[in-house]
Length: 332
Length: 215
Image (cartoon, rainbow over all chains, first blue to last red; front, side, top):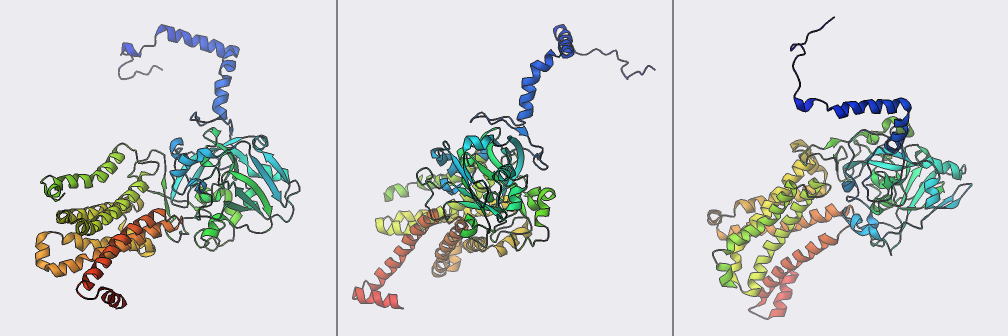
């Protein structure tokens, strides 16, 4: 059947819309290449690069190639925060308490050589050089929301692998119930270590099941490159369903213990910062509401409304069962 | 110096100078150059400038007396009103960026958070001072009552400081608040010292001073 369009198909396009002869003949060449498989070879490098890093690296630091993670919850589709904002608005008190301080001061941190000591209640304690630790498991790219306890959030593409990969290798003993992370505390390279704000070294901790959760990321990079110093180079933890301060930076010790370890902020103000510190819009910080957050670096207007904070930072489907039956108001 | 301060251009010049921080912030908004969290930057910068103008306006009288330049007094009202201008911007930024101008949420927040309550109280107390800053109000109130009312600024400065200390308490980061506290302590301390000096001026100085203190 012949279907007549309104203009009967006799309206000619503008000359600028006519495909030049060279181009349409070129298409045949591409088709021929496809048919012979040559295009596959030619494009493999490009396609492979796309698959390895969904995020365009900013070209600032050494590349850290990674494949997109298959772990459920590890690929949020929200707009990424700008690399510039994610690397210039940081809480890293070893380099100053203002969020603009770390980017100015962290250049003194020496990330090579770097050793991470695994100790405590494990069958295979040991010291890992950073290069060996990076190679211990395949690097994955994970796009996580990051919610700071101060009421702002970002979306960051991290590079690393599940902490559980390391934990399985070192074989915790039966008595190991918690994992403690200790940050470097070197007054020579970290100017604010020794200030009275916190009890140094910065220490954080997780319950064993939290540490074993596949979303808990042992992190070596972001935006397809190694971590900048101010973001916790060369290795940090990222626990996306907890407030940012739970994710210890520049780690030198991972210790397996039988009792809930003291954590830096809990020691500084126990009534404000609990051990769990799961993101929870229903449990306010004593000094401010946690119901909403301001998204940083996604290009939204200064006058855009704040967004609602989600329970477990939106990772309830993945981690909610870890806290089944727990009173989250009591164990904040 | 006095002649310079009495120059016709002096007041407009000071006015423009006082507007520079505001212009700087507006320029920052327009060029999107206020860092990763411009909302937070604006809230904090307007608070900083309120405190700075409080310090500046409290410095007028000590400077006037110590340097014997009575012409300085001409600028006191304008400087005080700029403190109020910046505190209004501070409150507006907080309401707009932190609370999406939700009045119920703002009221709840004021009740819930002591440091917000203290800051808001300082704003409320500063309002009648700004409202009675013109000549007719001074006449209507009578100079004595007007002066009594405007002594509230000492309390306001204290509340502003407490607001700042409390806000920084979360990070145990008192470096800046201590600097402001030091400045304000010196400015208020000078007034106490000056009052004592005047009180004991006529008769035996030391004894009168001690009597004053023990009251």
